[in-house]
Image (tube, rainbow, N blue to C red; front, side, top):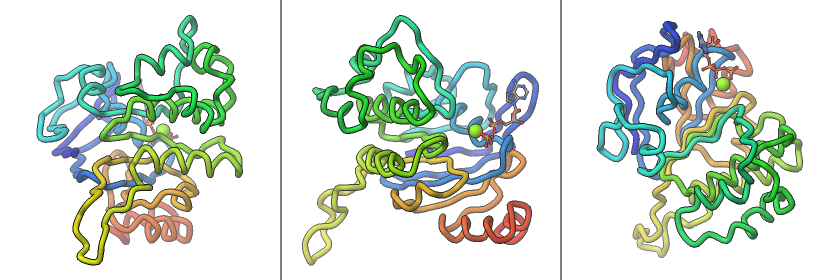
Length: 249
Ligand SMILES: Nc1ncnc2c1ncn2[C@@H]1O[C@H](COP(=O)(O)OP(=O)(O)OP(=O)(O)O)[C@@H](O)[C@H]1O
Ligand SMILES: [Mg+2]
């Protein structure tokens, strides 16, 4: 689904990401850990192709080099981003942006109800939304877009203990995690999961709701290690990032 090779990112003259190599296969969910300011959001924003990010190296999506494509072209190909801090868009209602995002015949009202945003549909996008409401609004937009690769920046930050379950269910829906992967005793692949995800998390709370396949640590702009998400999280909690990076290279 996604292959990054020697991927470097510079923003306003600052070299933030160095030689990132990362492969995410169809059906896989990866999580990204890392200290504040070490480049996690930069990685997601650069994959989405946001303006101002200067990149070198290769960024391939479904086998196609997308380095020179614009944000909307990447979105049409099937990449979606949940912002860490989404902008407010005055003059555009949530309902209208959802209609623009929607791929197929999606019942916007039902989806909005599931995310407790039914009464927000006529409000301007993110205008005055609380921290938790912003996260649900972002996920609602992604659910209507149905991207094949979902880039999720800190889905649980600012979300209360009850709503985190709601965020988890929405992510599972987005990543097709509620469909069985195998059916029948012969283990024939019938409902193979296709959607892929890359989720940034600080606390790891989201791992209690979403099954992740691979974890990475981004440290000082470099992908420092790759392993089992829960093992990495436990190590970081015990020893901190600097030890984690030393041990798990
Ligand atoms: N325009 C800019 N010019 C220079 N440096 C910048 C610019 N924009 C961002 N940075 C820096 O790039 C670094 C990486 O930022 P990024 O937002 O990717 O971090 P992060 O790992 O997502 O952090 P957090 O966990 O706090 O969200 C930070 O040190 C940030 O200050
Ligand atoms: Mg960030």
